[in-house]
Amino acid sequence: MSISAKKIDLSGKSSGTVDLNKAIFDETVKDHLIYDSVLSYLASQRQGTAKTKARAEVSGGGKKPYKQKGTGNARQGSTRAPNYPGGGTVFGPTPRNYKYQLPKKVRIQALKSVLNQKAKEGKLFVFDSAPMEKPQTKSISKMIEGLELKKALIVDQNNKNLYLSARNIRNAKYVDARSLNVFDILKYENLLLSTTSLKTVEERLSHEG
Image 1 (tube, helix red, strand yellow):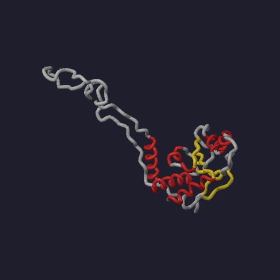
Image 2: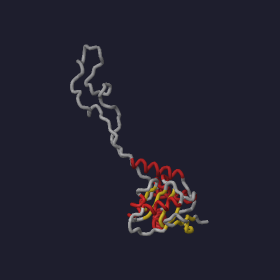
Image 3: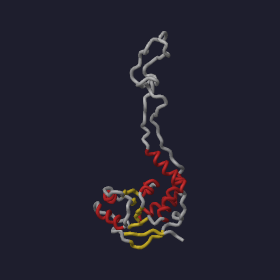
Image 4: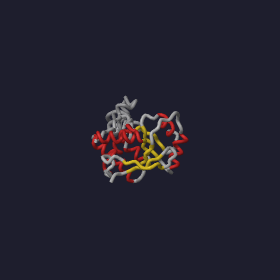
């Protein structure tokens, strides 16, 4: 039995259903791959710029605080040693790259899983992709309100006016089909795919999977 998604128009009204590709939408959801994909995405977003100064990098401290012998204190070579106020930090953070990439097949299976999850929950909608002469925030907002959606991820391809229309809507985001990722699909409760983007995503997952 094939999975179908509700087809909608720009007013948010239902206009039938769309049968989804069985090769992609087979109701398989692999939670561990979704988890790994989100971790990889979040790690890639980290700047990795945290930095503290070691004792060699702290200014000052060129003179011994007191003579080597005869004071009864432990010998000290500099006031910039870690045991002094204002001294260097021991084993502090240094700039690093947190990014790591999962194997290609894992990324594909994770994306398939999250798409299946949305389809099974009835939170995947398909709308006809139509060129917009100019940005129309009101019409896109009306579509989301018509579906009574709290959060929506809108996916199309090479549609600048749709991007401009959606960017001012709270709790909505536009993503190009070629940049569709697991994190955004999970972050936004509902997924709105244009017919063009659905075809692009299915072809991408069929060929690469």
